[in-house]
Image (cartoon, rainbow, N blue to C red; front, side, top):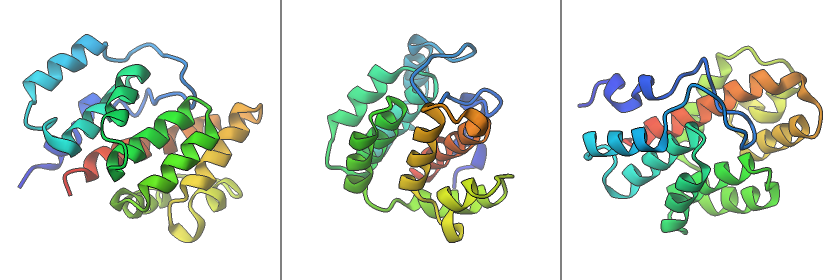
Length: 177
């Protein structure tokens, strides 16, 4: 059995520097070259369908949208790739395309885990009610909240970035489940 640190690789995901809600790059991220080196060093982790999605999530976290998008497109129709695709398009501000991919991906095991994790975050209503209604993760509710933030209502920017960070990390971690 893998230790939690081997699965989550918290050093790869800095919760103190979460991705922005859009595609704007930030400092303090790994370069694409560094991620390719990690891919070689941890070849077993990034092998197979789920491993490729994990790699796509790592690229996405570190603001390498094109690399992550190529991975998402490589196996369209596979639920994990489609979920990665949805998150990518939400960050691109292409909300209708994101919703298409969320529908295509269907319900993911990460959603139940994420709902529990988000219950521990300090989120104010009505934000909490929109993204975690009845304690269940709502991709559509989160996308709507992100859209509102990117359209000028920036008061929830920091909590939304924290939620997006948990979404990506939880998805990464549950790929092994």
